[in-house]
Length: 491
Image (cartoon, rainbow, N blue to C red; front, side, top):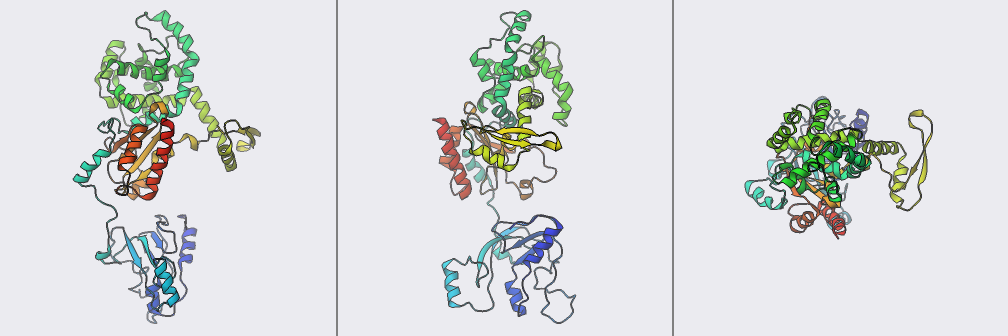
């Protein structure tokens, strides 16, 4: 059962929950199974764990009053009309409804056989989440989730990634954004660079000395667009010369697709100047309420590079994430792929079902599309057709929740990147935050923890820590299903 927050739906819900006129006052008190508190409406007619929105519920109509006194007088035993008692915190309790009349032997045997889960039968017993308003005594209230005390936090540090669990930089949302971008659009970045690489080599030979020029071998081209989470973290810190070279090559790979016709093409010697141009144009739009690093605006290359590696690694990560955002808007191959996905999203839902059933060698199915009343257009749907939803990371928002109400977010990466990247919130997430309330922004640094930085670490985490003490049944099944996929990829 699910009802929207509109007034009409709420009135329909109210009418649906009304019970027939009982024979006695005692049966009204015993049989009524509706609790209405603070806009949350719960009913035993609803599916377990369902709830009917957070909009303010209309005042329900009073049933036929069994008392013959004043009609306006409130029934103190009525949980609907009595709304003046103080509010109590939301807890999950077990409500048992006992009928006034005795059950027949057949009904009693049925109740005992099913554990009392048959709705509407005398003596029905069922665990339903309700919001209390002082209706139940304190003795029946139970905590919603176990608390994360110091001993538990110390014990759960064994869950974190062996490589990046203690890295504060890898736990930021910008770090996950960079990994997500290259897992999605690494082929487009590499293709746009390959289109202009031959021409750029000629122009670099004319401008730079032999010892300063970049040698674009196969290994250099591959590593600049396909790197692991641990490799990206090491490149951002830049302790070794090889890490600093990789950091420069990542920026150059992005910039070459943005400046294919540049007379002085981007390379390891001048990439900071190209980033500075984009920062002057787009930094305030992409990075709100943040100042651009001033090292990019130093004209001398040697001084600019020295200032770049002198600033904090968090600023280098923000600059790289900014350039990924610019590339998603200006790279011709990326924009073409996104536009095709947007166009395919106008097709009927049956087209998506067809795309799922078609194999890589099957012929496509033609669909006629008339976007916005314009001229008809025919789109051929194949097994490789992408839609807007397929370009989004659905598991990045929520993959699982443990018993301590910590959210687990998963990024599926390429095999060369490590196959997956799993993080979790360092604290319990409230119901308002789960709903994505208004005013929610990006998580601050330190609010997440890196649990797995590769497929091998994910398999080890599931084998050692995913059990009944930490996760429910559905979450454990989801972890095990992903392990089967990762083991097939690793082989």
